[in-house]
Length: 357
Image: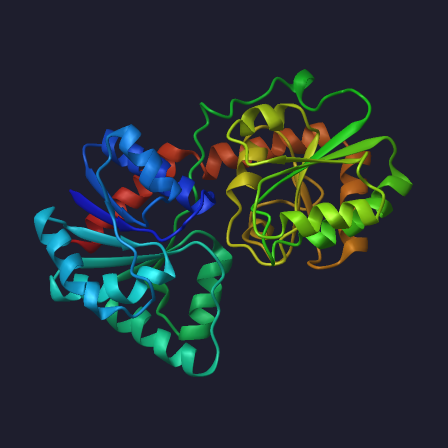
């Protein structure tokens, strides 16, 4: 089957990583995947290394109708059977091109994207009229789509992000955690607004009052990196916090920490948190993320209120003072049962076969 995926992520992210992993696995299953993405994006650079065809197009804005003929030409040239649209910038133009080309159109929602007022009514047209099926990467996103747009339940399928378990092998029980002082905790995230990172840094003094010694790693880059570093200096935390910048060796980072923290107040399903769980490192996450449906609170991780520094600090302290190594093993079991790349891609493959009949 010929699959065309649209993504407009300019930088490397969990969503981009999802597309890379899915494309590679679908290729192994005998499908031909073509990805349409932005010029100079992370996907445009990495996919050719896997011999996955790439078409680079920048629609500039969401309703740039002038590029629709080019998209139709792309669909026809590659004899596409099904289209999967993964980014809002491509939602309308790719959906309209797919409809005009008489192809099956899917839309994947991997982040919370709630609308109100006129925007809600306009997007209802998109979801109910222009796409044949919707994939949500978390149960939370599916619930919100049904609540906001009255989309029929059967039209939405939850398919989680897939984790390559070979890249994140299970640690032996005795090796889980560093077993060394100080404790080490990591945040692996884009350093952007609305990721809860200011809340996290402000919570660090509350954590160190109860657990010492402890060190923190912040891995990632983004638009507020400079502000976060300045906040760290203001709170006299430069000896406690290390900013690593963008890192590709995530398994190595995870092997050197005890737990990870995902402070984002709103998140569909954090790929970095899932990778942490796959590595037997339990996560402190907020109830505003899709992880709240996955993590068993106080058993395979901790769930805390979003945008609440005291709650976040208490969650970190309670997890580290508990048997966090056992929590890590429980987290790994969840990944093996629900997030194995082979399992989720097989589900994706079956869905495509069903909706293209």
